[in-house]
Length: 275
Ligand code: C2E
Ligand code: CA
Ligand code: CA
Ligand code: CA
Image (cartoon, rainbow, N blue to C red; front, top):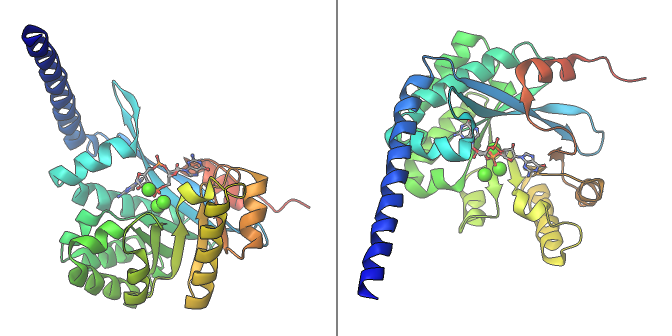
């Protein structure tokens, strides 16, 4: 039994080593990926829940790895965060999103995800202001999506940066709302423009009573705090009509469209209205 245990341990060790190796090689590849232009932004439309009109789109990064093919952001964003590469990558995302959204109709916004690690850089607001100036993109058309993780790290510093950004006219959204521990207290401490209801709740509506009650409560909370509410991960007509009935302002999800490349979102946005 002792021998068996040792063998199992060696197997565990071997698979650990393999994972560490795989991660290291991904990290090395990540370092070269910006220069090699392996990243691309996809965009997922956000529509007005009541009218169905386009409000804008969220930028979602994609990595076309030369050997592995498409690598999910869920896999490489954490590595970019741990290695500090997220700084450069985050700037690339912002610059690219502002440049590409400039050719959309003027009333449409672009939403960009910010990593908590980007808030460790005290110059974040300055960097963003420079990118807006460089690309000539109107600050009022830019939304930044942040998660509770950004406020957990160093709340004071993050709030100072968020106020600077807001003073520039940029809108701030609280992403993945309802999944953290102190979501409610953050709403009290910072005037977010928008609350994005996490897809884990949206997905279970309208059948699951608890999820339906949570979505309803968040929609009411947003309305009374003067914040817009967006339901993300909307996949079915039943979810869409429930959510709209509860007074959510915006819908985002596969029901409207999957995230698509820049050229496709531009075509979707500039297509003449159907008669
Ligand atoms: P997120 O910000 O919560 O983005 C929403 C995710 O849900 C996206 O996954 C999107 O493709 C997916 N999604 C949208 N609608 C539906 C739906 O109806 N059903 C289902 N099942 N999924 C849906 P994606 O693109 O794989 O991104 C995953 C996460 O990676 C994002 O979650 C975000 O946290 C992060 N991420 C993506 N792009 C960036 C970026 O440019 N910067 C940073 N810092 N993080 C990013
Ligand atoms: Ca997001
Ligand atoms: Ca989200
Ligand atoms: Ca998420």
